[in-house]
Amino acid sequence: MLSGKTYKTFDTLRIVFRASPVCAFLHMLLSVVHAIMPTAAMALATANFVDTATTILQGERPHDDIYLPLIMLLLVLGIFTTIGSVLQLISARISLSLQRSLKPEIVRINAALDFKHIENAESWELISRVSRDPVKSVMEGFGSMMQFMQIVVCVVSVLTLIASQIWWAALIIIGFSAPMFWLSIRAGKKNYQAGRDAEKFNRRRDYLNDVLTGRDAADERTLFGFSDEINKRWKQQYELGRKLQLKVTLRMFLITKGSSLILALIAMLVALTLISSVVSGDLSAGMFMGIMSAVFGMVQQLGWQMSDSLEKTSKVGEYMKDLTEFVELGRCQGDGGLSPSGNLCEPDTEPIELETLEFRNVSFKYPSGEHLVLDGLSFFLKSGRHYAFVGKNGAGKTTITKLLTGLYTEYEGEIFVNGKELREYPEGTVKAMFSVVYQDFARYYVSLKENIKLGDVAGINTISDFDSKITAASEQAGLEETIAELKDGMDTPLGKIIEDGQDISGGQWQRVAIARSLISRAPVKILDEPTAALDPISESRVYSEFEKLMHGKTTIFISHRLGSTKLADEILVIDDGKIIERGTHEKLMNENGDYAEMFEAQRGWYL
Image 1 (cartoon, rainbow, N blue to C red):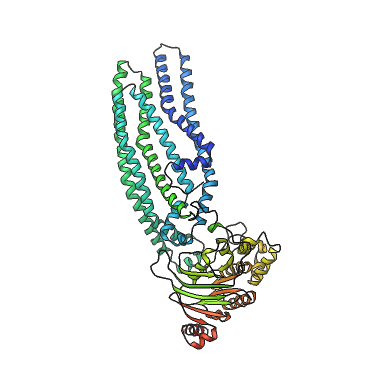
Image 2 (spheres, rainbow, N blue to C red):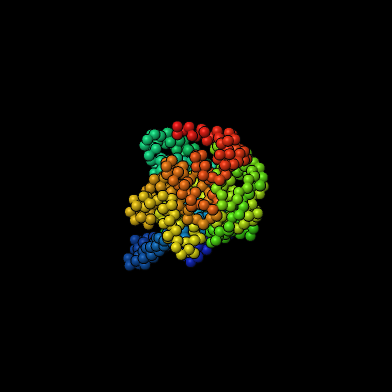
């Protein structure tokens, strides 16, 4: 549905027609009919009914003659009302079609975005604006265009009717309507820009709202009683965003709606002018009522509905600019179109065997950062050994894992896997190389079994004894007691989103994440603070199990708890993006350097 192009306002129609061509065509056709009826049909039907009733009251026609004009008037009213209801049903059907086609496309592009866009504040604001409710934005644009088309048809038919009676009034209305078009379009652009400027305040407000109402912070809200303070900050961010948008909206509202009052005065002038024609007998009373009903209806549309329609059309034009930029973020640099693979591809079915892994003079800074996180970093790792990266916060330990796993590729220097630069491998191959357990691991509210399955997506349909592997991984991660507590064992949904779901503790969630890593066939296991939520005894058990399970495999531990580093074959101490010490635990302790100082400081915690 979405392709690499520059989206304009009228691309809204193209998107709608691609999602639901039949309904979109019917909507356009009925919109034209719906626009003609209040003028050509209603005015003439009203005029005929009033004139017939007048002649009957004057005794010039029999009473039975009133039935046909009355039936025609009621029929026109009924058809007009019915078409309006049908248009609402068709709009709902189009909206459902967009939910099935456009929304998944937005989600797919989101999933395909490079990780650098997720961590960049400016890009994330763009992503939030486009992704918040794309169906609503497109439907508002489509609805406003249909409304504008109805207004044009209605105005043309009414002006034709007026011109047949008083031509100069039609010219005045046309001349005064032109600037209103421009004002309405300008209002739409200004309002959308105000919404963009308010986005940063809205994001902060939404975050604070989660803190105030979410389950994750419920216990600390009760314990520390910080709700009042957070509520003040929420209100502050809300007011900043609201006032920013209100200032622009109010000014444009006064300008556009003030202009509509002048149109109303013109309509009154037309009415006064036509009264003389009624008195002289050149214009029947029924036709006068029909024309004036159509004129005041047109004024309502020009003064209020048109400005609203053009404003929304202008806003969707600004949304389309954002959509263009959003789609561009997800474009594949190589083929000029949206990448069908890249971040969306699955890991290779069979991971490659790792022999060597080398960082050679690697420097890196984050796109929004000014300082190098890694500064000429170099090290060499061999297959089948256990390594530990240690260092203070911000030293660059986690950044190393982000480069290894391909989350960032814009680094200086080279990273070699088996003598081949990492960026030369396909994305699926890189994904299959590494299995990572982060400290801030994901919690998936599906069954425990499905949580663990995600560790080896490629193996679900290719390994015959996959269920037994899941059972083994859960036992190795120490989940036996957790499974026994769950109502349906490993098939129990976790969390409270799914019916009959059960909550588990933070430490139990961490074991689930570790089990995901254990089931993975990746040749390199990376554990980035994986035991932070575990007690020391459980942590010791996990690392002991890992030492046994990872025998002959390559593992990288990143940990602030240096007690676990004794299990490593080699320890690399990082500071300011460089390796400052390297060796076994015993060697580094004997050197009495930074590692020895950190280890002794932590040992004092337990004395």
